Image (cartoon, rainbow, N blue to C red):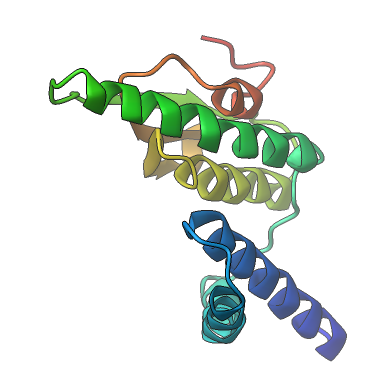
Length: 162
């Protein structure tokens, strides 16, 4: 990879880390922005090194902007749903589900789709990716007992309906 490509990749990982940090803080303060900016640097370097070590070549999915919008809504929706579960006074029991991904495209496109889906689905309070099965174009999620989210529906491959 050319030097400019490495810098662009590191900058993209840094931005992702900063945005995720800011999305999880409870109080927006300049100290949090500084902490996010500083601590995202080693994370970005590690992410670049890890991708090179595994020989990953990812191409972000064309649907990524829609998925990001669904993630933002999913954070609010799942957060409210989690609070409602707690307010009921019962201990919610999670469940494991498989989410099929679109199996079309090049290896770089499939890997990019899986990577983006893993990051975004795990960023919401209602789900956590616990399994990746690229051979069968699917991921496994542990979810709270909430209805399927718009993000899960968006990520589910159009040719892979329930």
